[in-house]
Length: 394
Figure 1 (cartoon, rainbow, N blue to C red):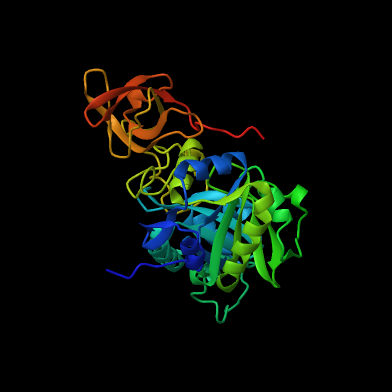
Figure 2 (cartoon, helix red, strand yellow):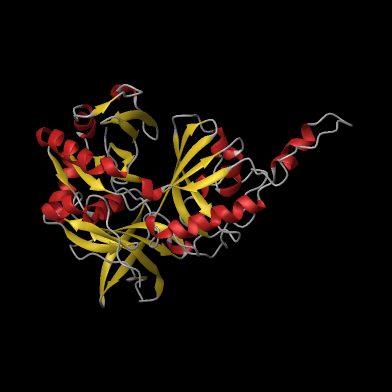
């Protein structure tokens, strides 16, 4: 068993009295004070999260966009510089290897952020896909005039793309909540902002500097609230954390751990790999068919992304009372017959009643269908509902 890994902010978390848990091989803060207090702070003001365990890959080269079109489910080559897009890395049989966020940094440069626990799988998949990606000579030969002779010296076998795992070079922080822009805009040390705060859009990013070093500010997040994710050099991460906490004192910012992050993303209907997504899950089952651009000429998983018509599908469930169904609990009908299984569940701090995501038989997946959650032998009435459970109003 390998030793647990810690982020560059370990000392900050310990000083704040954080409780730690293993997450993808990393020791991560699960809470600092109270799960509920941290959750409510993000919904009402802001929370700061250490998400430096996430994996980062830099994709560069003339054919970087085409390579990502081939490697992922979306059409990343059509994305404008300055934008971000959610996508999926699929296996040849259409199963989900990981869900990722892709940022286009330049015409020939992309950043892919993957889940910590899937870093090795994503790295291996990219390496394999480079080997099967058409070489530069194969791509450029059709453009030659008839009868033209060119040797393409040095290009034979060159794919025109390079993939580098840069995870150990960067730390990633997130500031999420209604006051996040106010916090970021008053944080000492952030300079050279490429785009004014008021013009930064959702699923876009901006260049900046922190203490003279590079800083990428992305208006993305995993909580259902407005917010930013900040990519910074490992050496600068502690100072950036301190500066954000200092600026956040006037705006209700609190440190928040994985427990709050999980209930926030559940309320927002956002899937978590290992719960709603897995190597055995097809995009159509998880409600992510829209992410797949099926008319692309070629991509890994093409022709295998659709699940069988009787395969379980992901639904939202709202239950009565205060007892929540948890991951692995059965979903049953009135006679006790098993219809499916909960993948994530909690008593919603924002809504005040139990919510869950579950895979159920298609015949029981229609909105409004009455089912039961088997909570340790007790049947709790529940209703199939549309996702997300919570949506911010501004």
